Image (cartoon, rainbow, N blue to C red; front, side, top):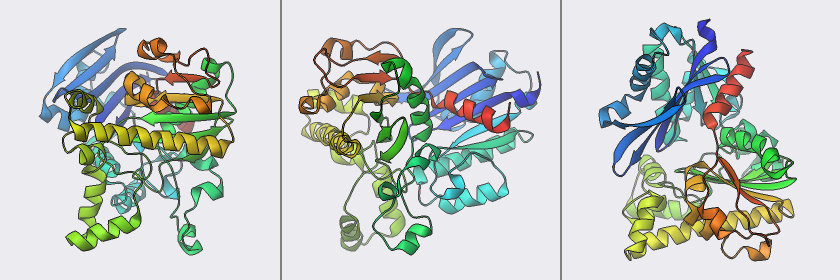
Length: 394
């Protein structure tokens, strides 16, 4: 088998790391590394089976080598040079990153220039690229855009109310989670019988967004120039009055880079609760009577509801509501709270169906609901593999 048809997909998120190894269009192994109950674990799917491995802090920090060792251990490669391509998810603003491209010196320079804008993702992906360049120097490196799906945004939705010259220089809404949205939108026809004319997808993970789609294409999305805009997230503030940011800078005399860290890494659910950025932990603390955890959950759910309502107005109706990503797929409590009180908009859940979700694609609306509601598991890795094959004509 030619080495160019054997490739690694790597997707380091803000709170997890995902890897997969493909031969042509067949996924041979996947590895999802995340923190659970205070420890790192790796969920591995290979040879038709799935198992969980404990992962040390050191192995998590050197996850690239950990995954390559896993490939050897499972007999999928004998030597590193058998990996011909490494594909990366690129979360970065700017038209340069709005399409899939091969990663070269110019690409790396552009990433470095934008690192200040998306610190949670670009610093991680730059480190990932450097590491794979070092341990797989023969491999072709490919960057798949996480914003390309939002190229369909109309001008009135993507522009900010700033001077025209600034918009023309590239300061406008790019939107993110595009790889996930692309995968989920392709699955909608099978779930609902056709592609809904007006749909809303709630991608709820550590990073979170809500997107309005017309005929399967993005017409508005909650994330903006960077992934900081929009919903309250694990550690990101989401929407905030710029004037409040200026006041924080004046009052606390904090430099720009500290404010950036504050809004990206110390805010969101973590900032509100003062204890955790993990919804599972917050729900446990809420049960124990922790008022700050309860407030964090209330604010989180409220912000999602607001975006759903505003996008129903923008779409002039809704034909389908979809939940995806880690929280959207796994937490029936969060789905329940978001949909509670949306009866006036035609949205109502079946409690039993919602709590019993076990498959990748399930309808969960009640018999009386005017709007179909579904959980559709996203697969960014598979969508990246498809995009890579299409780009490289594999």
